Length: 505
Ligand code: BES
Ligand code: MN
Ligand code: ZN
Image 1 (tube, protein in one colour):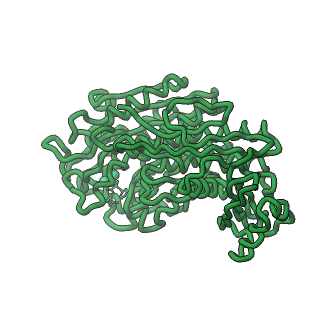
Image 2 (cartoon, rainbow, N blue to C red; image 1 turned 90 degrees about the horizontal axis):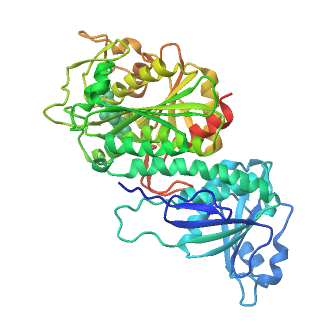
Image 3 (cartoon, rainbow, N blue to C red; image 1 turned 90 degrees about the vertical axis):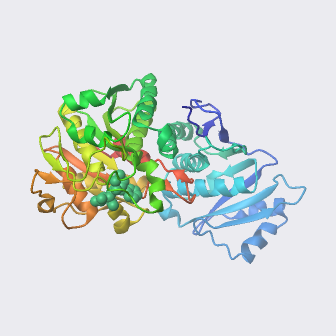
């Protein structure tokens, strides 16, 4: 299977693995003639745009007045420049209060401005970055703008007759060119992880089975990532009856995929991902149109694999392993039935009261494997786990669960820094998981669904520091916005990369 994602590059070129180049960035110290010029304006700016009076014969000042433009974040003024002007058109972009301008806001703006320029078919753009006022470094902001534009530019086009062809070239004037390029390359590597996660998530379920996913994981070997793949017979032998059980309904069965990037010899961090390549609900069949979105139920696995790619490309000084529990939750004559009891490798037996609560089953064995084989310092699992999470916090946040306040604080900060915000919800409710026949049921008898699911997972964390991220609702977007296009979002790659690279120590 051939995956397809757009990618962009600095002139000094990062790596080029894919075919579509739809945004190019040159970091320069002089702006090109004939381009559209984009200038920035803070609300509290002490600079003014008078230097453009001659080039616009004061049209710009007039437009600013007419539109009552004050430099509010995200607002723009756009004028066509006179024929004798150096530029074809001039766009002023508001940045808000300089003290409130963050890296995350700049990435979001990069996405929105890029979409706007592309919609207007503006092919050459000069960005005057030096007028930007902020407490954040200019080089960081310029790199984040480019990052946001690249992230927004991605499209999944495998099934489209006509690929997106339009290309925008940016010349960005920055004071510290070297520093900007260095930071941009780091972010471009993270983009590659995000694009992988988006490709995996957007691909249709019949083309992205556990075996297909395993092949994609294998392709990370060239980056020095060690890949291990366990098949159903091996899962059974190791006692992973929950993962193996969920996989029984599909022809190829379950897989456990391990991707280890050993950037140093520290105790590893384990990332565990839910990889349900399609969630029909099984015999507890899903009803209604939402079932058509269930190709994205492997987005947790995609996020942790994408993170490994991002970290490996950055040759980061961390030891991190991703463990992915892969299966298709299907109806067939071999599927598990409601009321069945599965044996987990941890030793807990689980009564499957509802076959649609399958994520916690595959995760239980994946978490056990991560602990048993890697004795991680910290374990973070990522899963499109519950509809209840969406009802609780919607899709602008993911939900996090942990008894470790330090981890919660670190993840919350990382989320703010990359625009993938998290909100803490409670654990507890262990008593609701009791079963008449087994050690637990996979369905709480009462209590909020996102919390009972998280509490179930907690039974498989042992005494390892652990945090669970429920990304239901975050994995597929139906509307492009900021740095996020339509389709698979790759949610979690930027969050986890930021946490691993900056916050976890
Ligand atoms: N994959 C779903 C959760 C989900 C729902 C993700 C909507 C994204 C969007 C999960 O496996 C599931 O079916 N959960 C059930 C659990 C219930 C049966 C206890 C749910 O949340 O309804
Ligand atoms: Mn389900
Ligand atoms: Zn599911």
